[in-house]
Image 1 (tube, helix red, strand yellow):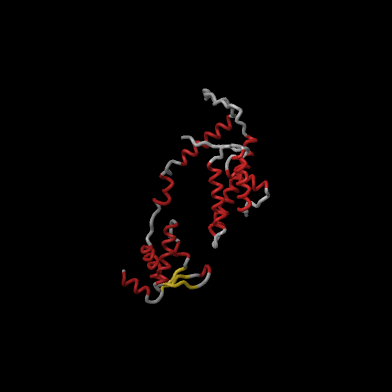
Image 2 (cartoon, helix red, strand yellow; image 1 turned 120 degrees about the horizontal axis):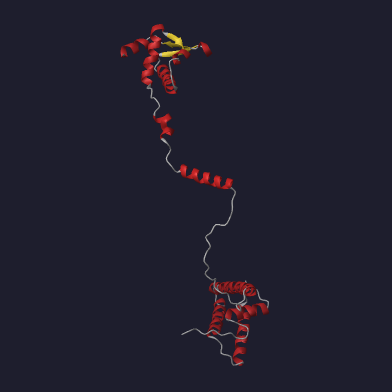
Length: 242
């Protein structure tokens, strides 16, 4: 069964009536005086009954709720009544905000107008804009560049990495020791004369570091005069190993 709603005078419900009484008597909505509000509310209910109006049950339920709040506040521990009073204040504040928003919307929206549904129209898919040839070429090149970017890189891109000659440090250690074995010393820069690429240069340099670390050779002098010398005993050790 559909629930019936009653509109009594200008009141659309018990909260509307309570809000009217608060504004009329200039009560503080955040600190409601329940006793004064209850007496005003009951007078309004009696007035409605005197006018032989059918008072909705929700109005009577609110009256009993106000009586319950008042009774709870008169007890030795009125904490429950204070909590119920704050809850009622929150409901009234929320209802007040809803009324303000509804008033603003009623001024902007009219229900006396009829809006027809949009008619279905066949879309014209013909492209009618014109462009200069230069813009079309630039757009094509941009699209072609994006498609090429998604392709895997060519084999030539890895040729400098994959096909690079690998030179072992061990082989260059033997080469450096052979250069030093005859004269026991040699200009540091001449050690790299027979290097043909970066890999061989790096391997030769690492070989010299390994020999210095193993105390087989040492570097003496400064600048262009630097010499790589075989340490006494290091050559013999190397000869025994080979």
